[in-house]
Image (tube, rainbow, N blue to C red):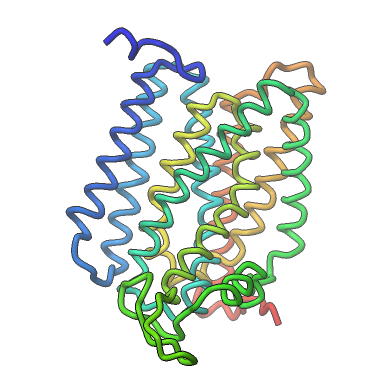
Amino acid sequence: MDFLLSDFLGTPLWFWAAFLGIVVALLVLDLGVLHRKQREIGVRESLMMSGFYIAMGLAFGAWVWIERGDTAGLDYVTGFLVEKSLAMDNVFVIAMIFGYFAVPRIYQHRVLFWGIIGVILLRGLMIGFGTALVDNFGWVLYIFAAFLIYTGIKMWTSADEEYEVGKSPILAWIRKRFRVSDELHGERFFVTKADPVTGRAVRMITPLFLALIMVEIVDVVFAVDSIPAIFAITTDPFIVYTSNVFAILGLRALYFALSAMIDRFHYLKHALAVLLVFIGSKVFVADLFGLAKFPPAVSLGLTVAILATGVVYSLRKTAPGRGTAVPSSD
């Protein structure tokens, strides 16, 4: 068992084994026990599950803090909060995707579960690539930081714009080259039907599978923002990947909890924009003052303050009876 003490990407292998064991156990619990049968998930259950996943993510952070020290613990918690917050922006777009394909709530869990499996694998590849870049070309961090500042400014200026699912070029490409069913067929991703032209039985993609593809594509787009954000906090691959995965694991529960009150968090996107600019700027600030790294405790404190301000302001501005309308994208 000595091989478990050997390092993998700067972290003992047993740390990685423990992390993967927890993730697999959570996925099995979710799909194999709690949601073995297809059913609609209510807001109360979603809030409880979201709270559970947040607690698990923070508990893992506490373990990292104890085993690897204050700096690693602070970096993990900061990364977890940032990724969790950016995931909320993802929730808004997922709601538009499900609305566009008219996916009933009873089938949304299946799409999100398999979507998150794909996210875990895709982000692993992207983080591995990012780690290799940072290790070999340290100046890449400055590119990441500058990109985050640009993305934050762009997010602020386009906060009222909505994602238009139907205009996706990838969706148009799929519909042009593959047979796609016009209607849903329960929880099935593929269905065999008679071709309307030839009358032969053919395999078709259902709108539910198109929704899954769009969820994966949207996450790749969001990962382009979120992965540089966590690299600007820490370059430790273990912290980067684990904080990402624990934030994403609760995305499914977070979606069902927030989808019914998305309008209440309309102004949160502005706070996320400020957060991205802050995370990108602190790389340059640390370099300007000759610091090896921006103080993790200060970074965590400002991250919490920015997000808390965004949530409180959003809830107050959209409170019933205040007469403040959510701006339209038209």
